[in-house]
Length: 121
Length: 383
Image (tube, rainbow over all chains, first blue to last red; front, side):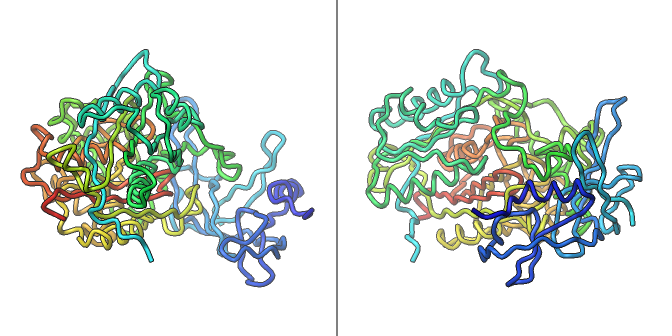
């Protein structure tokens, strides 16, 4: 049995305050979300590496809520390593998030789970 | 070497049932009723069906349940779940199975009571562990993210999205079966409550009940069953992702791939098409598919739909039944695209009939722009 447990390992790193993504030793390509093999090649040589946390907003939306519940941001972020993820940008008004905006990853703790969010860089 | 399916099979009957609200009926009841209605149009019964292509939103084993319900003993069952595009894929698979002699009579069916039963989209897939913590309002937010990106890259405006909704409503006003037929203006759409920016509630499809069914046979038998068979000229599909963050480019869908292959099989191009039935779960879909299926260059979709471009009397007849936005959207809408294409190509579309329509494209979408499937249909003249 492989010791790699993609979802569990990722969450464990995140809870320790580390944003870890995968990279194939043979192709050098980064992979997100975590998997047991690299897409397309099927290579099973994925290793965990720490991401720098720098990214750019690829797209953004505001999920509207009925008042008084505040509306909130959902955004798609391109990390500097070349992977894309769904997340959100916090620390500014949800409508103020712009495509192309540089952002920085931040790990927050909500309930009993660690969550990756972004703030304007 | 791909099997050329051009003109070798035909749709000979099609029916809808329970469009809008059908209280008291299960999804299976609705699908069964549309099916017996369609079969009866050409003197067939469920007992004649040997190839079954079906799914309902609330039953993972609906292929089996449906066969049992109507007493069908299929030699071939397809219960594929690619979302709303499943029905265009069924037509493709049915054509292959018919051509290979595996089956003789294919029935493609769908039914859903989601409006009466739940009043919202039935959630029948596993929530993504990577996206659900952000409480994205799916599927709306995923399409909103695609729309925002299109606006950013190409200058598409909310007015362009609103044009799509208004055009759909104008077609719906010509269709007595459509669920929403009250007047709708650009201001109404743009002033409607935002759900997930830039999409308002009027940029989103309806939540209705409804069922559809079509019957397909080999071309040599089609003329014995009906005077006006609708021939399958081309079919193709492609999947690019599941969740929106894995979509390679939010402004280019896999319809560019499925469309190219379907046109190639059919030997036609976008400029030959009389009727474009494009899966409009959200207003951005229509714009993306007009571009990806070659009706206008990439990025020009917003301008193409401007000034009533796809409304009745516009430059292209798009979603002539009123679409998922104003006619019917019972969770999965793909089969209604094929049924409306058949109506138009057999001259049964009433007030919304496009005179002399010979070629139609029915383009299905599944997931969040994830699965794309194209079917090209034509009258006998196009063979």
